[in-house]
Image (tube, rainbow, N blue to C red):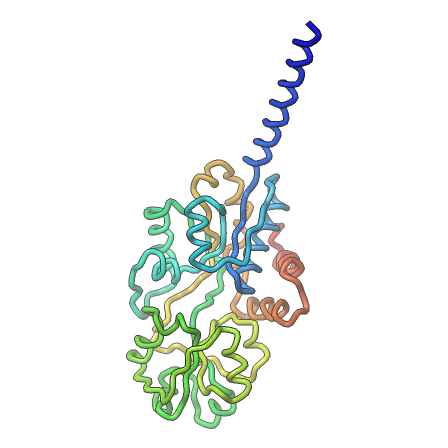
Length: 298
């Protein structure tokens, strides 16, 4: 009899332990992040807000290549991550974006397409646009009165152009940009992203393709040219979450509602620079970001 009671007690303890483990797992949300500063910073902001505004346990999986990040959320290896509207349409939905398409239309198409094709929910945009742009040294810009890409076109045959490898293969990349603006650069250089700013600082490149919220923009004396023909699509940053996770944890959406239109391009340059300059860690910058913009009160 004692033996039977003892075995029953063991089974009850095992069931309790398994139930506890299962409960913890079902209450865990996995936040993913790409490999560059801004993506990891936004991922960490999302993670910290979920930790502070819900009872969810948050697991972090950062430093992933863009394609791997997208595959991971589709497989369920991660549950939420930040993505950009233009990238959603071009890279994953494989839809063209006509020059001049307004940001709201780009967002609406990305949101509808991600839900229909992948059952992924695109939450509200954070309000900043991290798209492509061209940058030139300020001295050259001022000497030749260059403010826009169209202003640059007559000088392009005398100039070298540098960008990361992927920019030369994109629909919103080098060839179509040149066709739109009539650029005929004397030299094209494909380079690692990390070398773009260094090459301009050292006078090795005349024109460099940049992202409009790059932290390094604050360190160089450059002019970011206006995309006056609106060639580059809008790349507004939005949290993307799996529908099944949102069904299970509906508190996620209101917890992140404060991210809507919370920040400008200038703010993102400033925060990216704090991390890139080594003045703050990703975690510390995310904490400061949440505090500065009052995200826990929204």
